[in-house]
Length: 335
Length: 155
Image (tube, rainbow over all chains, first blue to last red; front, side, top):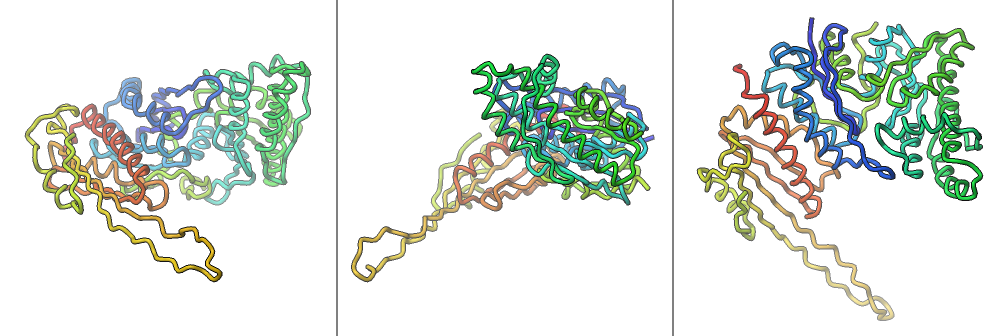
């Protein structure tokens, strides 16, 4: 019955979680929120994480009702993500692993999302749409790898939404995507925006440049409201994601779809994916904001799987890496 | 943190200075590093002479195209810990992550007795400064972690 402690801090969320045998015993998290019109920079984000991580660690142990000796393994995000924040979290994981003399496990952030999605929803072998501020990939499991079927060729969909929010100075609290979603519900007019699907892949930098250009002009002339722009952006980018997910599902003959990552919290995206799945006779799985958004328990859960399968990360190999492909990891814990 | 006087050509001078003042109790890190930390800075300057240029055919005015001067900066830091084990734990926590920007800034961490020694080499003073500051921030976090969740369990 191993209990695994997981540390996550690759972007502006920092979380510490505890998982034991499929039960999430604790999952506290803090978010570094910047003023409207700005994004989060690596150095400042790392500073935020360093200031709160030890309190979060204590909270996690207390909430789980465990002491350090009850923990069997320390998991942390090895990558991908932003350098300084990743380092800030990794050094704490390495230090407590040595203080408590426990094995260390470097976890791929994307796989953390997938494993938590599988645990929480019970989906058996879904086509995964992983969408966040940093990543946009369509993934399916095959022969011991999480294979990337399609992805963004430039920026992540969440990055597109976050940067659009800055143009309109939409609040980043609790997250820019959440606020865009609320405004989009009040949108009435669909503004035509560039739609860019390239085979199995998608591109968002063009639509971002376009909307950054036209937003000020259209708002000034009263041609549309900020709510209309939020609505139009969501409808367009989400339709692109639905298309590439459907293409992968058709390829794999898959009857299950799972959405993970922060953008997966978006109810409109879930609604559009549900429509597509119903048309195909497939089932859609999604998690709530506790697990969609980056969190420590997802790293602990992936770590739990890896630990039981015998993976270990020697300290000398434990360096973080900003680029870490989802298919680089050998998924020995699945058939 | 005491800064030793900069010696020209002086890594040796820096190393000697790092042993002084260990009993001086500067605090700052609580009980863990009671003597504070000492740093020595030396700028070694193997200057590259600018090459001479002969005038070209026709005797046109020439722009100087000499190689930029390269100067290797060295920075050495000594961090005392209460025990060798704790120095080694800190070392193993801070060593694995690679420096950004290719090899412009390099650092080496070693443990001697209960002192963590860090030595930087860099050809760019701006990047060196950034690396040192980032290292000190991460070092501080490691020390706070050890204070709050230590001492190390017996092996």
